[in-house]
Amino acid sequence: MLPPEKFIKCGDLAEIMMSYCDHRLCCVAGQYFENVDELLDILRTCDTVISGSAALHLLLLERGTPWTPKDLNIYVPLATSRFLLNRLQYEGYTIHSQLQTNVINYTYSHVHGVVVVCKGQRKIDIVISRTLTASSPIFQFHSTAVMNFVSMDTIFCSYPKLTLCQLSLVNAGPLYCSLDRHAILDAVRKYQTHGIQYIQCQDLHGVKNTCKVSTRTITDAAMMWINLEGLPQALHSLLDVFRQFGVLDLQWNLGGMTCGLEVIKEES
Image (cartoon, rainbow, N blue to C red; front, side, top):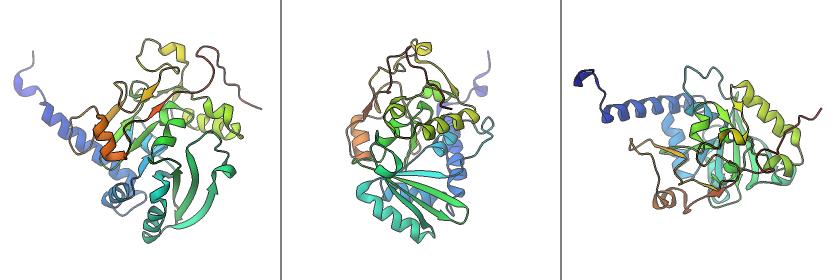
């Protein structure tokens, strides 16, 4: 048995974890802002979250993640979207394009529209939510691997037992409802090149709350919260969620046929 001085205390582990998360967040923020405080202030004052490949990149181990995100996806409620745009323009970004939902084929979505802003080679996609919370469109993504977000003080992962092992289920709902299946399939292929392995639902029935027919919530026992300001903390209560996001809870199901019947066929 190792002597007591060789063990790492929980407090020390929490400090190491916080330092590592801060480092990863600084790496993301440094690609788009002068320092991490500017990004954190935007997340706080505009009620926004980061999602997409940037959030996934932050969750995965640095040594095993050779790819880097090509852009930053910021999700914002409609009510604060104008304030966010003004803030980014103040930081030197200019509007490159604006697309409404009916143009970008988000027929199965809580997305109101997408605004793309650029600053030199830096590119930020602003995804405007139809709902009161910025994060609701995230649970309609094509893959569980990207159902994650980073807020001002938390990192959230919907399917940690899969995502942290670089595994994913396909959320087929967008495939059935979108007018452009090619774009969704291209996104799935992109994450396959990033090392994400797609598996079938029936292969995971031994893992709690991973079957596509399970109703999931952001406060259930299968998700993961990392509190950047108060580690170690694993769970968020309904009150915590309401204080931070203005809603009591969010629920979602993965779309598509009953598990075991669905086959995704690439279109030629």
